[in-house]
Image 1: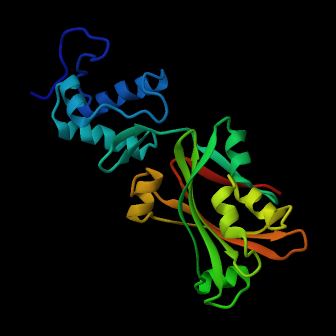
Image 2 (image 1 turned 45 degrees about the horizontal axis):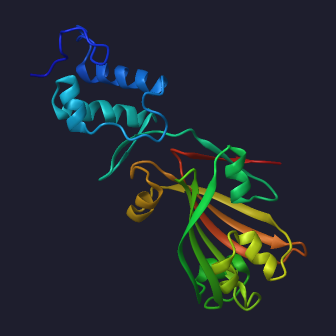
Image 3 (image 1 turned 90 degrees about the vertical axis):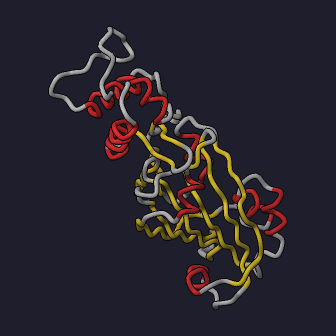
Length: 250
């Protein structure tokens, strides 16, 4: 039987004539999100639990969740469930862009997870970004950036290995890239170029960033230079659009 219970219940309002059942479920869940019954980032009950609660079939529940996902209220992660969408963070691109400072400006705690750190030959794109020949050795750091434990960026950072022979060890020990570069003689650096594009995420990116595969990524290619204007880093960063938007600062 596909209908709401007819007995009065604040969690399960009576069926409204002429209103599709899935729309009624959307209204109830939207109200609960608005009053923080389900706070940002929280996992919603499973389709089976919602189906039982509203006395409807799972197809009806799925239709409601799909609508909420399209409206940006819910993000659906394959294999993990449905989650209340978090507030969108403004990532301001300026002359001195730093991940930790950005996250703390939103009253959240920054952290990171190193996914890969090694010396490797540069492909054509990375070599061009660093002003090197293709195949030159670079230090590559792949890092997942988190705000209050939620992924907000996936960055690939590349540095010329010949210029910074101690950087690989420094990155293993330092909590931030800024501190690691400081040990190699770079007291400060600034953003010279930022190029922004958008594309759909690859499966691994969607999994790491905990985002739906049908929502695009924002992708930035960044060149950072030292005080003398010499390139110290070429980076490629991916941001989940359900959680991040990019703002350019004069």
